Length: 483
Image 1 (cartoon, rainbow, N blue to C red):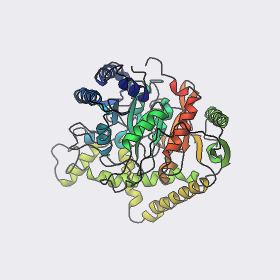
Image 2 (cartoon, rainbow, N blue to C red):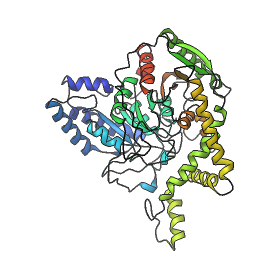
Image 3 (cartoon, rainbow, N blue to C red):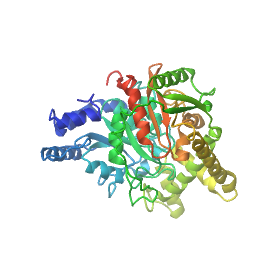
Image 4 (tube, helix red, strand yellow):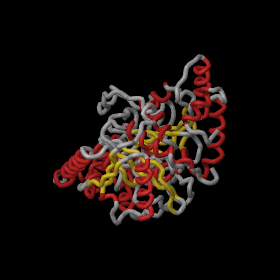
């Protein structure tokens, strides 16, 4: 049962081959048995899962249907879930039980999805390795000595290890696509505003976007169908009709114009990954796609711009966690200043503190124009590059990451080295574009991803290309040994 995709589960439930309750119990037992190796879950919600599974079985018995009805999933632990700990991977929120469900949680629950638990993550979604969590690092099921990527590493590791078929995740600078690449999954970051951020604890509000992690493009289409849509509670949500993402999966790629930016193939890219990307290009050419070299000249400025904008927004968003209104409160404060200092010093880990300091500096008097304003101007130039490129091509293709997953602890002493691993992913967040990573092969036994980017609200096109590619390759079907 654990090897089934979401689509296969939907067919099995419809054909009454098994019940949602049976499947849920199998997967809960599997998580209990195998997750101690991975540390991919922060909280298991066994009682809720059984209750939701039984309810889904009753709904099916009464004639209801739906791809998510009775399907087991998990939520990244920054989506608020009513009455359940929502920790954001931080000591600051270790005792926080959300009083309401995030819109994404509510929508998936209404569709009949069964919540198995909350997955581990980098603290407040800040990191590229899932090593900054207060609950400990998550391990990559392909090699337990390596990172699974971040910040959605818990969701990625759990799905890759076949503990469940799919999970929610979030992407601020690549936190869905990079873990997908590192763990041999398909991960989709939707257009900014496509999926509601209401009830999703913020890191950088103008960059954060929720999306699915699953094994196939077909499963991502099913998940996105349940997650997407306008939400009046979220002022950045876009009132745009949600298409049937599964309906366009089998469209032909004949004549599809794929742009390959020359800037992607620089000295920083592992040549073995470059070779796998070229193999992916050849595969898509066989399916009728036309390849064209393009240029994204401002890509080189994206990392410095991102690491000014994101920390600046984080320093503002995280100011509410002060020991008074929200979050951890220190013992026996001497006065208000001591309360603030010790509560924040004890509640936040080193990576979060680092980014708050950078952000506060960038927003301070005398430096706002020099750093934050300049970064926003670069952001506009990055967006303009993409708009110009999409006048010539339909989608853009390249590597998801410059290197495969690194060893646990390898970059802890050099945060900038970890930041540079986001070089291919952060531009989509700066511009608000949809992006997808799909499995493209292996280097030294570790998975590698190829990234696709599309114009706004063209998630269906990305899923279509990925699905056609997956019909003609088998990388996505490989399973890590021991799982």
